[in-house]
Image (tube, rainbow, N blue to C red; front, side, top):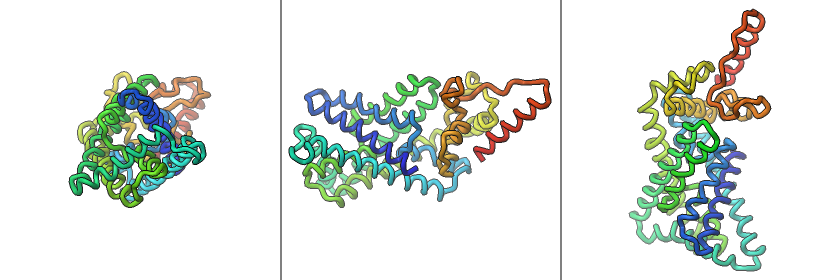
Amino acid sequence: MLIRGKLSGAFLGYATSLAVLVTSQGLPPIVGAILLPVGFVMLALLGLELVTGNFAVLPIGALAGTVRLTRMLRNWGWVYLGNLLGSLLYAALFYLVITNWRTGNGGAVADLLKQGAQKKTLGYAALGGSGWALALVKGILCNWMVTIGAVLALVSRSTVGKIAAMWLPILTFFALGFEHSVVNMFVVPSGMLLGAPVSVGQALFWNLLPVTLGNLVAGAFFTGMALYATYWRGALKTGMLLKNKTVNPIKTDEVRQSIAILLQMALLFGRGISGCQNRCRAFSIQPLHSGGNRYSSAPKPPRSSDANGKNREQREALCGAQQGLN
């Protein structure tokens, strides 16, 4: 979890710095918003860990009784730490690059990062309690879109569809200027390294704390629990069918199927299970060497055979796959 969290933080740092770079060249801010989802798409397709997405996934498992509260909090803690470490690592390396190993001032990119760091901390501090509440609300509105994008990606069965589904909500939150805690883990430290007059305490209290809480509220209540409350009966039924490899995705409601997959994801993340084979079995994803559709939501059921030996082998294989989820 920690390593996957670090990679997610670094990839979002890449995407954010790309958005800042194009904005510093005089292009409209909407261009940066169009480019930012690159990072989210990369980490989603690679199956990495992003705490803002887990804010929506794990409460579903807790409501379904498959994830204990302690495991949920453990996952959030490790992934949040990994996201922070990855963002700080990329921020430090990016600082060395744009300053030519501390021999320059970073130019227009550095100016934008310093302005962003001050706006996201001192700007809220100047408003007092209203500024803290403003950062909280911006965090809620941001992660509402981010988690909806993650669920929409589950609805699609093609790679292109997953990318398009994630792109639109994430573009929306960034274009509207809302606050994402992991993105800010890169922006604020980068501005501080480049000379923004922001202390660590100000960065934590006026930005990361309210924005993280807002992201948590949106993920857990506005997306995870809301969708679970709406689709939980069908999702539980579909989840059992997926687990037993007998569901026909063409005849299953896509949203209920997505929530069922989220239930299985919550079970895996809550238990801290790692390894490609476990996740491939849990999500019914074909390995690359199998020759099948890698992102198939449910493979075809085992072929029937009159030979008792083959039937026995198939039953043993199915039991082994089910044990991977238990």
